[in-house]
Image 1 (spheres, rainbow over the protein chains, first blue to last red):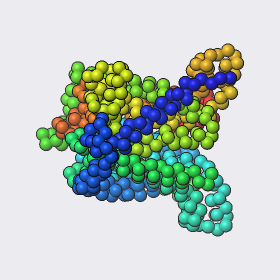
Image 2 (cartoon, one colour):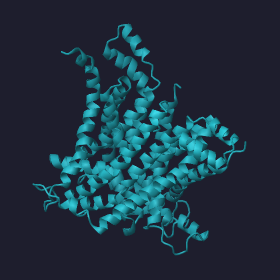
Image 3 (tube, helix red, strand yellow):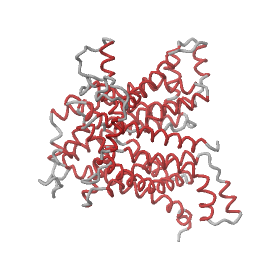
Image 4 (cartoon, rainbow over the protein chains, first blue to last red):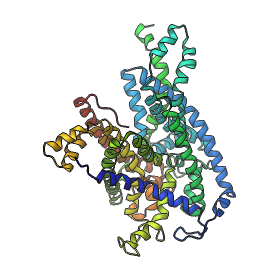
Length: 256
Length: 292
């Protein structure tokens, strides 16, 4: 039976649609001309400009502080959540799953404004602390689902075996459970870190003066700034992203 | 202590930290949207004392009606285009040889990991009057040479589809992977055309994946704010833009709260509808898996 060529054509058109804009951006970051439509020869000039841009490096520093703190907390909370969702089937866990799942779908702007209201109601000054609290909140769900996916092919007999051999709960967690879950936890952490580094909408709502993160800096550069420097910055960020994706694939595909 | 309760103590201890966190920093703030929309604004950009319906009443203007209609229209169009592209793509990836499948899937997932702002920025450059995409379209005589793409509704729709499409492909693929493709051949043997078999056997067969795709595209799309802000103009503002303006320009938090409350209600309706449809599907096909 002959198969239609329509699906294959759509698939490759979709992939071209995904990657062409990114490709143009990367090529343009090496373009000596200020405007993307004309080619002015190869140049690293925009990268040089980027490295002299002090605000970007300060913003990057803020971004990394938030991302590390938020990832650490989200990994602990998300792993606990995944463990509970996998271990028990009760009405409590059904409510728990709904609460984990909903933040993934709710528009970011609603999460942003609701957290702004929450911090305003508490009288908390906006800054890196409020940004970190907000990032933990949206990262928990992602970590939980990644670790939960990893738990699906987890054999509980191993835990029972450890306990039969006299291991206490702490030894069981530390020597059996955590090593087996490690690839899922690291993949969840990578995802949380990437999402935190990338988040703009929620961050914008709960950021205060002096807590500019990289996406906020990029946003203001897009709004009133110099496009070629953003091309260079984007290319560097894309390189980091591709490395992270590659690493996370390695981690989740191993031992299969 | 009650035995039953003691048995469940470990479950509670493990569940409480994540669930408590989300209850305090997700559920409670969401409820706060409705509470604050009923408060008066104070002149210093804060929240005043007492209660008022002024901000809810202020929503009933022609201006907001246009914005709300446009928000729904853009979101529904985005969802429709994403589904139209995701169905054949998910189908093709699911039928590809195993080795290829992993690569294709990775290629679909990578944009999800790449910076959201950068992907929008890439399109802003392409759509610019001097940009490559605009010039290519003009060269092919698809648009007049002096057409304005950037800052108009088509640009917003294009970029919305661009950012949402991976979210539509993944659940469609996840469901298609478990679909028994022999059913399609059976349909063909029974005299169905290719398209008919696709629409009447394949699409209903991956129903839950399709519903998940609708859910994860439509609902975030309703809250779109950055895309119209960066590639749209005054004729493509959505409710998200109005919320941001009330917060960052006018500093009128209760008014922003009223708009956010409207969006919350508008988001809960389709969400409840999809969940009900999925629950019904589950009863019919209990072995079906969640598609995200």
